[in-house]
Image (cartoon, rainbow, N blue to C red; front, side, top):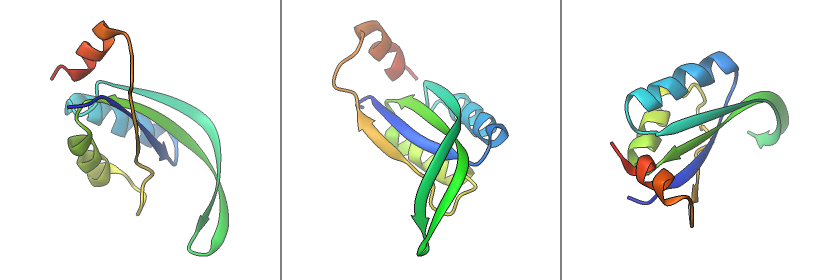
Length: 100
């Protein structure tokens, strides 16, 4: 299992906290950092939209399980789930990240 950092936005801090905690409790994420106050500008169904969201930085070595859990729990029809590979990191941290 390769470590990745997953970007995922949420509509508000309460939902981000609730889902972030569930991901850690289910052991599909090692750590979730929440960054509130993100302004998103995007096109949805032909219209340019703006929204204040919370960005989650999710660290995991269990991407497939994480994606399934986010899809189950997330309120958006199409949630942002973008996995960025981790090419290097503190060996002890990467080991911790991969632990069940």
